[in-house]
Length: 118
Length: 111
Image (tube, rainbow over all chains, first blue to last red; front, side, top):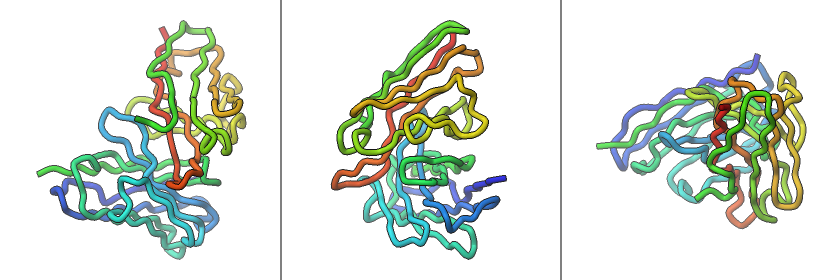
């Protein structure tokens, strides 16, 4: 059974940092694109970043470029999102999602809430 | 303002059919596959349709997808109260700022 379990969310002050993790199991992690997608309270889905199977390609939404870094450790079946210089508008539930291709997210984690507030 | 445009809400009676549109451009829908997701209240999104019109295993054939040019459509027949949810279209945008894109979401109400 495919499982994606996010962790690392919490309350952080504006300008602070947080590192999200996603533990994957039930599939060959190194064979899939992986993505982070977020959802602000009461709002729609927003794609944040993705990373190719071997980590050689990474893409980010413009609003997080230079502040967020996506990475993966295929030996540990884990995906990460390092978030720096956090802003109030980064407040959201962050989902980890598996992608067979860049256009499809076939499995999602349960999400972890990040709240940026003083 | 989402890159892909969806109607904010649609509604229909149980047993009826509904369609949800998703409009984009040549840099996204026009040149990439479209997927659709269902998000029930308080839960993570779930893949309904991928590659424009394919259903993952376990998704009933009441759900269908199509694409024409720079627009895509999700169809749901035989509506059930359990279909009440938010529905999102998604794809890849191949412009200079390449990345994933979603529609703003459509709230389906089964009257």
